[in-house]
Amino acid sequence: MSGLENVLVVGTGLIGASVALALRGQGVTVHLADRDPAAVRLASELGAGVEWAGESVDMAVIAVPPQAVAGQLAELQRAGAARFYTDVASVKALPLRQAAEIGCDLATYVAGHPLAGRERSGPAAARADLFLGRPWALCPTAETSPDAVEALRLLIKLCGGEAVQVGAVEHDRAVAVVSHAPHVTASAVAARLAEAPAAALGLAGQGVRDVTRIAAGDPNLWTGILSGNALPVADVLEAVAADLAAAAASLRASAGPDAESAPGAADAPADPEAMGRVTELLRRGVAGTGRIPGKHGGPARAYATVQVIIGDRPGELARLFQVARDAGVNIEDVRLEHAPGLPLGAADLLVQPEAVPALSEALRAHGWHLP
Image (cartoon, helix red, strand yellow):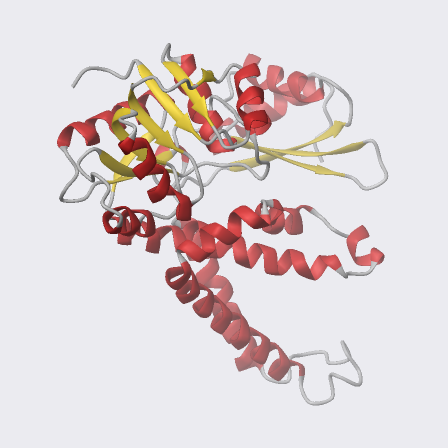
C-alpha cells in the first residue's frame, strides 16, 4: 500500500478539524465536507484543508456522531470516494453492526477512535497537536483488509497518535469505564452546583474544578455518545451508584440517631465501623488512581509538587517556565488555582522528586515566593 497523499475528512467539528490540521502539518492534501457549509468555511480558513469537490482520495475519515457513521459510510462508498474508510466515533460496536446491516463494504472500512478531546467543540477549538502521544483505538473485524488496517495505522502515525488494536465490544466496555461513565458522574456532581447557594460557590477550590471539568462538554453530543454505548455505561454507573449509596448509608450510620437535630455535635462517630467502610472506598479510589498510566502510556509515576505564588499578569507562566528551563528541570505537569478576589494564585509544578531542590533554589533566586 502506498502512502496517504489525499484524505477526505467528513465532519469538521473538534475531532475532524483536528485530524485535518494534523494531516496538513504532515504535508497531506486534505479535503473537507460537512452538512454545515459555515463549518467547512471556518475550518478551511483555519488552514484545515479545502472544500471537497468529489475527488477520489486515499482515505476518508468520518467524523460524525456514532449513529450517523454507517449511513455516511454507505453514501461515501456508493460514490467511490476513497480506497479506505475509517471513523473517529467514541462508540465502535454500534457503527460496525449498522454498517453490516445496510450492506457496507467492511473490507475497506476499519473502525477507529482517538482518545483525545476538549471541553470546547467546533472547528475553532481544533488543534493540530490534539492527538500527540494519545491512544488511538483501531478495531478491525474479520472482514477488514490488511491494507485498510495499514492505512489507518499510517494516518494515526501522521497525527501523532499511538495505535492500540482492540475488539469493538472490548473497546466499548473500556471507554464506558474510562470516559463515558466518568462524564456522567462528573455531570451529576456539577448538577449539584446549579442550585448551590452563592456562599458555597464562593468557597469552590481546585478540587471541585478538577472533578467537574469534563461536565462542561456539549450535552447534545454526549447524549448521542451515551445512547450508542448505553448498556456498558449503565453497568458502570450502577456500580458507582452502589458505592455512593453504601457510602451515604455508612455516613448516616456513623453520625448517629441524634445527628439530624444537632449536626456536628458528636465528638466521635456513633458507628466507627461504618466510617471504616467509607475509608475502604477512599482507599480503593487511591488504588484506582494509581493505575492510570503516566506519560507516554508508561507506568504512573509519583511526582513531587513545587508550589509557587504567581501573579495574574501576562507572561508570568512564561517567566516561570524559563526559570525551570534554565535550571535544567522538566515540568511534567502544572496546575493553577486562582485566589478569589485577588490578582494572584498558586501554580503547582509537578516535577521528578530529585529535581525539587534545584527548582526551588532557582525560583527563590529569581524572586519567586514558595509557600
